[in-house]
Length: 154
Image 1 (cartoon, rainbow, N blue to C red):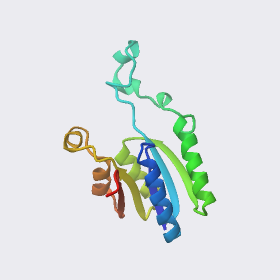
Image 2: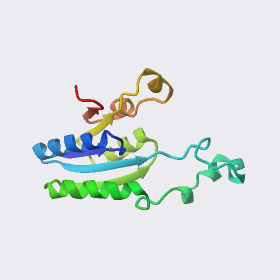
Image 3: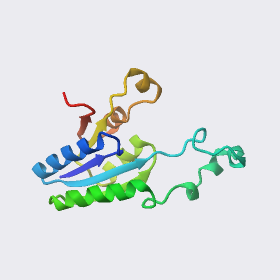
């Protein structure tokens, strides 16, 4: 059994990790911890200088992408993976940069995940209308079961 667990280091991350640990132990699953770095937005993330006048293909070249383990989140992800390993769970850490939904689906297929687990922030209708929902996108595109951890306990 392989479980892909997508975390974004929000306030919901601890709850997702706890639920993933419980599920992985009960199913004897290997856990793939995934953190996705969204691609830079040409409108928001490019500093206001001469580079902003370059065509988008030149702005977003591979050299501008952070190396996977040169970012602060990598240390957090490695720490979480070590904690799960200490609990007896076979765990791998993955950091990738892409659209969140695409990255989650791609990594689940690449690693042969039997289930995907991620959180739902419950931002509301306006946010969902303007921005969209990662959890909804994953549910629509996934070929395996998807477990959604809600933002609040009921």
